Length: 247
Image (cartoon, rainbow, N blue to C red; front, side):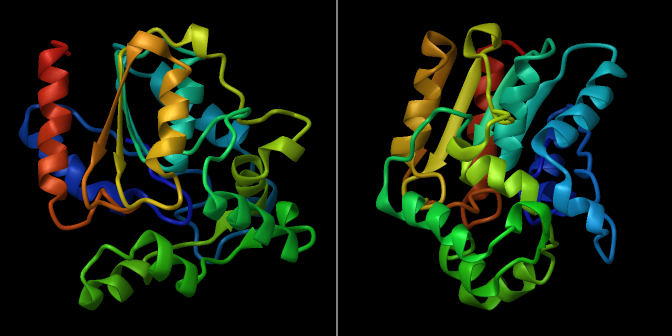
C-alpha cells in the first residue's frame, strides 16, 4: 500500500486492517523522508524516481508479485512500478495522472498554476497548507475530525510535486508510464466530489490501459476517500474485486 503526498503510512491504517482481516499480508512503506521530523532539506529535491526506486527494492524482496494499492500520488507511483516490474493487480484510489494526461477541470489547471506563485518550489521542502487541505482534500470528513487528520500531515518534496502537478514542464518526464507494459488488471476508484483528481481525469488515466482497467466512481466521496465516512464500503468493493479476479 502506497500513501500519497503530504501524509504517511498512517493514512492507510484502516485499509491495512481490513485487508489483513481478509487474510492478506500488507506492507505499507513510508516514502523517503516522510517519517523524518523535521524533514531534511534533501526532501525538497527527492523526485518520483527516487520514491519509485525505493518501492521497487521493497517489491524485489518479495517472494511473489504483489497487489499494489495506491492513493493519490501513491496511485501514480503504483502505475510507474507496474510498468517496471511484475505485479498481480493494481487498485488505484483517486490516483494522480502520469505524464501526458491533461487535466479536465479548471480547478486542476488553476491548482497547477498556483504553484508558480512559489518561485523555485521544485527544489524546496513544501509545508502542508491547512487551508488547502481542509477545503479540498479533507472536506468530506466530519468537521470535528478534519483538524486531527490534518495535524498528522507532513512536508512534501517540491521536486515530486512539480513532477506531478506541472508535468508538462518536466523535460525528464519523471511521471511517464509506458501503459502497454502494464499487464495486470487494474481497479480505479474515484470520489464523485473529488476536485484534486476528479473522475473525468481519472477516466482518461484508465483509458490508457484499455480493457485491463475498470473505473468506478463512488458517489459522495471526495479526495480523502481512504478515510471518509463510508470508506469501509470502498474497502469491501476492493476485496470483492480481487475475489472476482481470483487474486
